[in-house]
Image 1 (cartoon, helix red, strand yellow):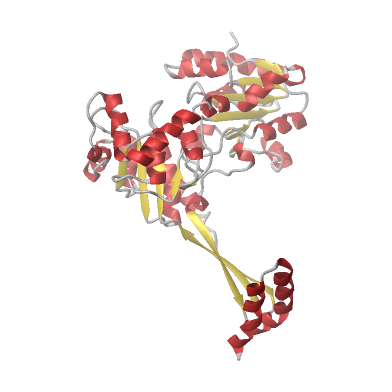
Image 2 (image 1 turned 60 degrees about the vertical axis):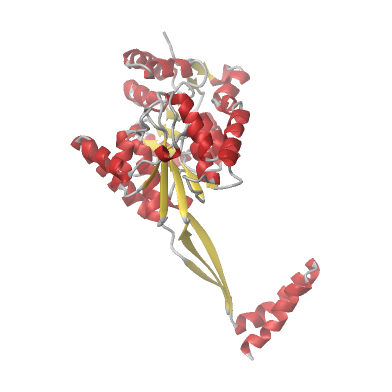
Length: 438
């Protein structure tokens, strides 16, 4: 059957390779005008733009106060959640918190010359709007991955927005439970571009936040790009994608399951195997077919659809060429699958580009409980962006201190530079500083 095409890279049509590298980016960009309209409506009409949209979706008039998810609802969702799921979420929160606490940067002081000191320290942003998607699934894990680093960073005002799941404006129960467990009381039943716009520009009900963070679908991705004039954003996180790098020294069934791990998210997601073994490629392809046929809807259809466009098995002549492709593709999730995985990683880790690298580890482990964050850059943005961390919720402030000895050493140099650049007040400020020690 061969749902996932096997493509020999050296013989492949360049347009085919280009399409694989681009993923669904062109489709996302085609939404620019639609998303721009949503953002402008929220900027001009505020709550009304959101309630009008939700009213059209649910077939009844939605009032602005219904956008607020009361604390009592959050607590009720937590109480009604199964003990098994609550325990899994607690375990996830524990591990994610432990890892993210280690990310907290320490203040620094550097004596750049005698009597000349330069420093830096870090402060949390005042507020953060966290977007937890819904629609193609329920994602309480995203609520954990967003809330934990914001909490660890020390953000005082944390707000969560997530789409309502029914006309009664209820939100996903497990997401509500996470909000309760993490002590987040500001929660809104708002989704997609409307939520991003509300956090970025503010409405009467939803106050503006300095940072907007969280993954999402094409509308959310585009809304973050278009609203960057009003808020700081975490990273470009769009449709999910996973890539497997293997020399063929791995179990084909194990690799096949990891290959579809991210691709099952949606029809615009991607799963790509990069390998140097043709025999292995064929075996993995056979296993992928079996897996897809065994999956329930809509996951089965999602995989079939994205396999026609964005998912494939790529065959390379050698590992160096394979690594070069991985670095150029810069996947959201990269898994190295091989009995030689540790060696491959050590040999190539500084050439690889990815949001996260899993070494002989299922991507689902990192998605939930390893402790690393699964909010990661997509569409090749891993070349320039890192995954979500505590740093996304901190700003750095530098400190400058010049003592008398330092002033004596730097004054002539500052004057020369200031005069060359045509700034007499700069030069005057350094000259008059002699009075500080008189």
